[in-house]
Length: 124
Image 1 (cartoon, rainbow, N blue to C red):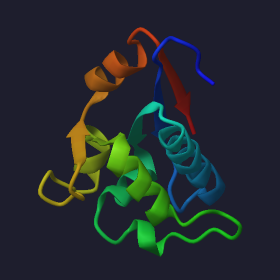
Image 2: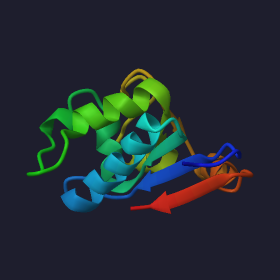
Image 3: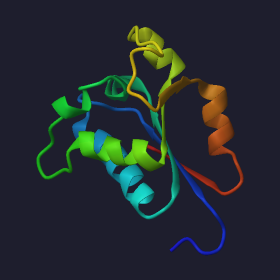
Image 4: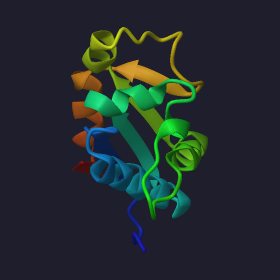
């Protein structure tokens, strides 16, 4: 599928329950890529930042979409999940609040990942 070159997929989710289809697309694409063996980094920004907290993904419901909590579990198992520093701060979310495996990092780390050789970035 990906040829001989190792690729990284960086997915930035900018929507949460405020735009459920866009949110679900980001998680679905990231989880599908993880399942296909791709190195995946999912960034939670804006309203999707809430999904870094325990129990929040379980509250998300979109008909005909895979459960967000299951998609997040797949991504956390084999990929990376990062909550945006500023987005987390605006929501008073700190490192001790997030799910195990979720880190909080800023724009410099996102830019580094997105511009790395062999990286493909998608924003939803």
